[in-house]
Length: 378
Image (tube, rainbow, N blue to C red; front, top):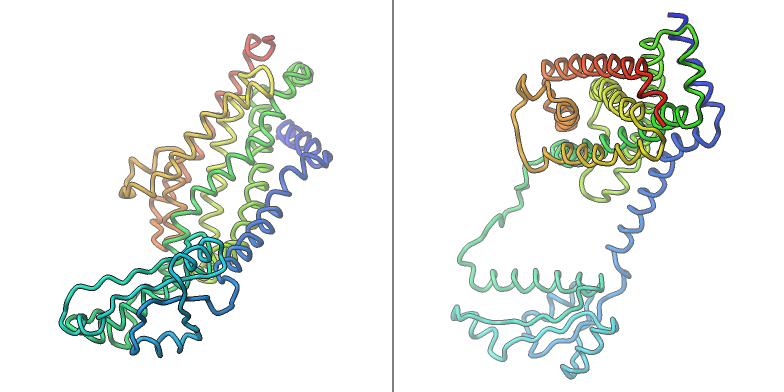
């Protein structure tokens, strides 16, 4: 136990005394929070447009429709079609509405009408004006013909609650992001700790000490997992805190998640980071340099992203067999917790299987440490 603690203490000292490495692990969370928050504010301000009444031109505007547009604060003008088109292209005008001459008469006889709305989709104000005009004309048509009314009452027809909306969005997006953060956190520390020491020759000093190779492997995996977990938690907190601002008015309410939900997420996260660290530690032990370890790990990163995106396209039941698939079982657990449908048995099996895989990976790394050919290859 003393030897194990000594290895862990050495890794922690190397990490926490290196300000650059410490910044590499902790700064991403801070940057994610500020960047995503500013992105949400910027997107929201862009979507709101200028706030000024749109410049709208109309041809053959029906008299009954004029008060409708006036109620929006619009001042409908007339202009030559070519001139109006040029102004819309340049962003000086927002909309040109062309109505048939006998619009009201033909509409009352249920005759097909074609109203042309010309706008510039690259301009927010123009797109907004188009959407409002389309809705107003459609509503006016319904009021004249009134053959079928869909959801015309004052009831609330969307039965989804804020909790349902939050669960749907979070369970789709967060598992993929969380797995990417876990992998990047492991990649930030594991190759440097093992391949870096091989490359510098300092690993040889550790191997000739009385410390058992298995103890050395376990100490490195545990310490690197703790540091990677710290990095992932920093990024995760930055993401969760900035997510409501990033999503704007999409109905995200993070208050629907309680301590139990975050405790389950942390338990799965801890077991998952042990597996990922064990895999990258094995790759780093086999590699001769940090650059080589990074290149070997690139396909694994792609695999992790593909696995984390599977729930977006395929809905699979939470069975015992799937709970034994490393990495995918963690993605399923993250998704179920954020969707408010956690399966306690599935989560327990996932955590236990992840610890077993992590133990097997530690044994593999220990055997690789015992191989002179692997540890001292040039």
